[in-house]
Image (cartoon, rainbow, N blue to C red; front, side, top):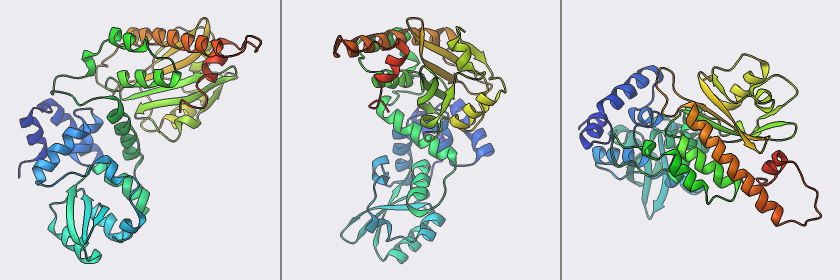
Length: 355
C-alpha cells in the first residue's frame, strides 16, 4: 500500500515541501499526517478524504455523516471499544453497520467491532479530526483543543472556500480588488465577516474579528487557531490599557507581538493555544469612529501571505460596507428615531443575526 504522503505528491495535490513540513509537525505534535497537512492548509479536506479512500480501497465517511448520529446507532458500539479503535458508527441499514475508522485497515479492530455489535460491518475511512471530535461528542473521550479548533476551521472552509485545482494554485490568486468587488454587494455585517474570513483564512494561521461598542470590544468571529467557544464570549473594556484602547485613541495599526499587559493575556486565553506571536491588528472605522477590529497572525518562521498594507486596505473596504449597512438600517427606521453613533450602529445592525 502506497503511503498517503507519497500518494498525495504523486497525485499533484501537495508538494514535496508540503509533505516535509507536515512530517516535521507530526513528529513534534503527533496525530496523523493528514491532520498535519490540513493544519498547514496544504490541501482541502475533500482531497484528503479522496486520497485516503483510494489508499484504503474503501469509501470515505463525509463530515456530515458524523453529525447528529442517532442514539440507537451510537449505542451499538461500547464506548470503550470506540475509543480504543478510534471508530464511530454512523448508520444502520438492515443488519449492516456503517463505521468511520481512523485505521480501517486494522483487521483486529474490524473483527472486534463486528463481534461486539453483532452486525455486518461496513468500514469507512474517516478524517482523524472528525472522528476524534465525534468520540468527544458521543463517547465522552475528551478531544484536544487542537482538534476542536481544526474541525471548526474545516467547517468554515468547507462552506466558504472551494477545493484548490492544484498544489501551486491557491486563493492567493484572489486579490484585494476581487474582494472589494465582492464587498460592493454586501449589505449585512454577517456577510462582511464571512467574506473577510474567507479571504484571510488561507493566508494566516489565525484570524479574529471584534466588534467595537461604546464601552469596549467583544469577540465576533474567527478562523484558524481560534477557540470557537471562547472568542464569542470575549469582552474587553476601554477602561484599561490594551491594543483596542490604542486603536480607539487613534493608532493606525499594530504590527508585532502583543505587550504583556493583563488585557492581552485575557485576549490570548480567548483566542486559544498556541500563544500569539507576530500579528497585525487593524481598526475598521466608520467615519472617525472605531466600529470593528481585525487581528491576523501568521505562523512563526514563515513569510506571511498578506502584509499589513493589504490588511489595511481590507479594513478600509470593510468600513465602507459597515457605513452602507448603517445607512440601510437608518432608511428603514422612522425619521423620529434617535440617531445612535456610527460605532453603536455598526454593532446594532449585527445583533443578533450575525453570529
